[in-house]
Image (tube, rainbow, N blue to C red; front, top):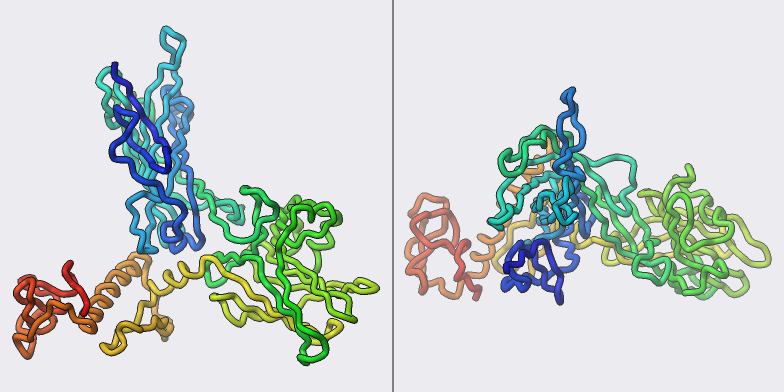
Length: 497
């Protein structure tokens, strides 16, 4: 008897995505967890951890209008997608996710009363575009009875655009147009005349948890700066008097919730989803509507971090850092002593964006004690954003004496309103700059196999370097595109001295 196994299995972190004829796959591939380099952050401006493709099939009714299929019922099929196992771990330009799913349609039953539909395999390849759209291809195959082999039914491509109406906190949704297509009539039935695709991408989040549960929402501050969505961990505040001597400076941690804070309305980390506040709090309005921009309408999402800083003879300062939807960070402080003062909105200045984030809030004498508050925290995903920016600006040429210690400096902005390069041109430019970087590297740090020079000027007419003796390849050039000689910048045997 032959057993057919389809689908995927996760066994001791080994991932099998292969229809086959044995439960034990000899070529299992180890799974990989979340990797910022394969999170689509450079293309979609925020990181994602996984996604779901919904592939829908339609037939024509008597008037030629699209309606749900009968042979392919239900007429939608879901495919989990994510980072492929063969992505480039050392590169942030990974914009392709893949997935495979198996489904049995339910258009009939056999003599035993069991479903007797088609056994289908769907393979999806999704590509994130620098324009913020998605490209998708879905290939459908049917497992043929008796032969135990898959035959191709259909392969179709889609372009998907984002559905508006969400702030994208939990994820983002994309959909395609309804497009005409045909399925293999003999083996797969000719009923399908139209298809449509939808993709839901699930966001990856960084920051403080509102409660001690793995699925708890984050109260992370979240803002759109420089075109990228950035998230901030629980920040630290340094409170000090503006004159430096009136009272002793204090350092406190914002945004940390104890496991019993909800009972006493004493939590320091809150997430408001537009309806309810998490964790629950009596009189939530005292935190949600304090004068920060964007707090109205009441459906706007808010994230709050707060703390109290006690000062001898002054009472305490209650501090709130808040982001509303994706607006700039807002700071509010009130003095609590014998009486509770009103919330005062301060002027917040970003002194340093990353490594770490440093902000200074000044209240210009509007608060007793004339305090200055300095905030420190980690920004995510700052490293990937820096790489994305460097991909467009590129590193400067290396000087030979400074190659091991080179610094990457952003190129100056173009003058005169010159048009920006297209996304495709940008990626091509990145590849070109990588080639130039490698050429500079082999010149600055010659290969250990590079020998004496054989000429004083390049003889190839290829814009290359002069010919050198090479102990491995006979002779070579460090640069250029000479098709007849080995080039150091392309050489697998290159090893710097």
